[in-house]
Length: 505
Image 1 (cartoon, rainbow, N blue to C red):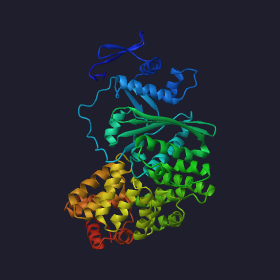
Image 2: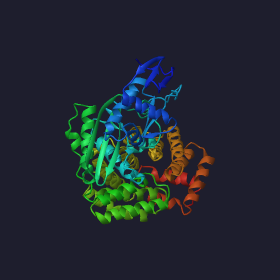
Image 3: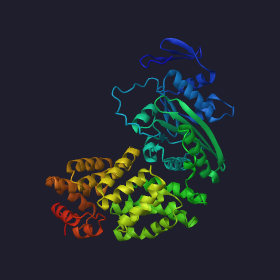
Image 4: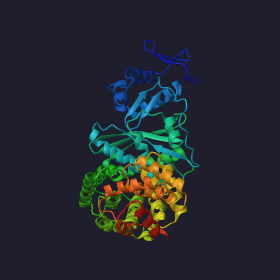
């Protein structure tokens, strides 16, 4: 029987049954206990650890037992009746109404598509959230290296952390067929990773498994999860594709831990103090492992952001270039590290052609990374390769539609559209980019240029005053000297609009 969402589901506690569409149905004892406990905590999220503790009491059972019961309940009373809260647990949502006009679903790609939700932290220590999140980010990066998969980027799925979500709606919102969820437990130096793969539209569990090992074996555990997810989604995938990834990024787990702590700031840097704090963590990681390419690349990433926000001069920012060169020399098949290194070489080192070659190596290693595609987009735009840039930015945004730094990606797209003369489209993209990232200096500059080209002089000059307030020493001479753009009419065009919006010579 399929549950009619217009009819109530009544939990009959005394009879240990449920009434569905007016008919009383008996269910398994454990499934009822799970449902009854969720009902008793209606209005709040119940963690997986709490459910295991209260439903199974003193029994030592695997989390997969809970997963099986949740899947059975969803099949019985509706996929929307129990919401997953990524990284936490579940919430009973029987009373929730389906939106009358749900957001338009993104089209499914023409290849197996997957979103990995944040895993629940069952270590018993909220201070380990960064470790759990870092493991999941690495897992997403490994899965995205498989060319036959379409994998949503971590920065989009992590916007769902701690929120009650309907898996079917997540599938629609992100445009994916499958969702991977799970949890991580830790006892001493031992880790247990519990995972389950769900078909988003139906909530049907396709596969679940548990992986156990020591923290020192974390990379092997990630590889094992990747291989089994690949096999469960697409039996014809050659598993060698998922094994081709890389050697361990470091052998020093303390360095790895410091890198994980810096990672959130590397991708979303709110102020200069955060830049200094993140760089300090990464410098400590390099002191422990001087060959740690990923840490070097993240310093390059941080430094590029600091330069974009005008916290550093170009000369100050360029001091990270030896680290970028070190990554190129020993990148250990780390696509993200190569992308950041190549981007730094193009943006800070003014070697656009060489930077592009480096990022293309990263793309060969991981064609599904939104960070790699974003770097490719910017450098192609610098070189006036506008069709390629537009394609790469568009793909990056599609792979990562909820990325906290999507404003930066859309800024690059908008500036490139202006370069090809699509002024209205470019301005629209830049206005959206500025709404998504209000403090991003490049969006202010691009929008000022777009307004000027459209004859919206007053609006362009208002943005000119904002730019001068942000960088009081800004001049036309310095801006033209430091720009990475190499279009044929770049100097004349930039001189005209910068002078027009009030930037001094």
